[in-house]
Image (cartoon, rainbow over all chains, first blue to last red; front, side):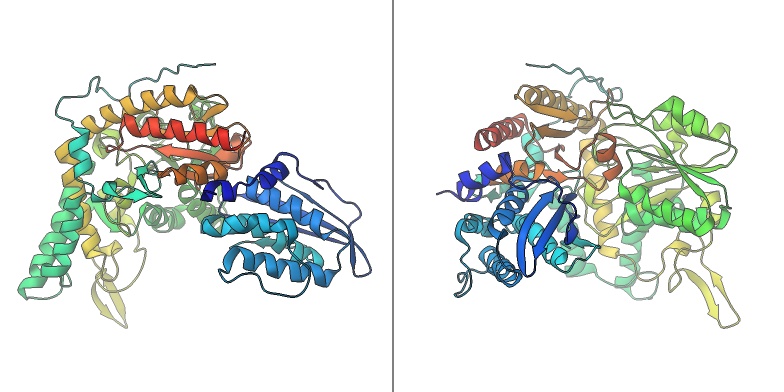
Length: 150
Length: 423
């Protein structure tokens, strides 16, 4: 597979074309806005929690294919997961994008999120994939301030 | 659908003289031999920074290897020579910009610093609450934020001349926005995001009828057009070394002598003083008053080599050649389905901001990079321009004297590939 088809896998292109869970969630237990000053992209993550479990999660905003697919697939993956599982997945996802030595053991599996492994070869694009996850972190803490990738 | 866009010829140059040989020019720029991702580098990000000709690289290297010393200090030979080279570079930039005297050229870090200098040392002491500074929608952030800061410091108001759908400065609105409170007009000569060449001469003329001084941001003009500050009659003109194929960390501010002479210093330190005591300090004369501390000596000398290089080729030759490239590229890109050009001014420099359907410009940029093609994607440090067109970003191909029609063809093939990847 070429670096390019590795980056723009069909799964990613599909989520870019038809993003899942792209809507406003009101009322939300957690909400945060993320901003990437490099490209001007903005994303808002909404969370609805049932105790420690993510009952519903959605996002708004538009960005590049990588950031849109990352938001879509993240929301899909996290619905029904606990907050600690979500944080563990973020850590694994971050390592998938930056760490050459694999993603480590234990905790929930990345599953389809491994489609983002190709981003590792495009350092300028790593933030596109992680912005929504950083924003999720802020939403979990229900911080209203804007998260920046810089 | 194929759209043919006809663009008016800037300046008087009608035909490319036979003396301009792009292949010869390309040989002057060693980086153009590089490959990226296994493909020949196609460098179309010239509005971000220009590549460096060997003559400039050699000048800087020779300065550090054989001529380095601090300036305006020692009696020793090296210092005397370095001072002569530094002041010689000032004279070269003076001639390049058409200024009357070398003292009217102040070496700064960048065009950004030049504008900040004018904002803090010219505008700040004169602005009063309710006074107005007039800029335009198409300014680079560097010609917006320094004015916002000084307006905040003085209680003045920032006013903005709008642009039309083609990305042109709206002259009638400009005339209406000039008021009895306008104290300064600042405008870019060439828009970095849209390529628009502004009618700066007319803008200056109208402002001067009301005794309002004008600063021109020439960062994007200097690599592409002949500049003549006397003919423009501008009060300040800012240029950036690295954008005109010189070193980074050096730029120049032209200012009319009487204005500069009246202005207080911008920064304090060595070089900008004649004598220092705790009872009082006597400032140095223009231009040294504005060059506190040891300056970027190698950068200034490198900038001198850069203007030599540009003048040897001839700015009119460059402008004519780049206009041919612009016409070719406009037609070629317009021929790709779903490509939309942002910025279609009648008078344009060779900058093509574009969108490919609803594909995000970052994705366009990544796919082009895999083909060895360097374009800028994003807001181009001109977010108000993006907002004007309801966008967050565009892809931008900005051309220079060493680009070729074959490289435009590579860009077009790359854009077709983008469409293919995204189905």
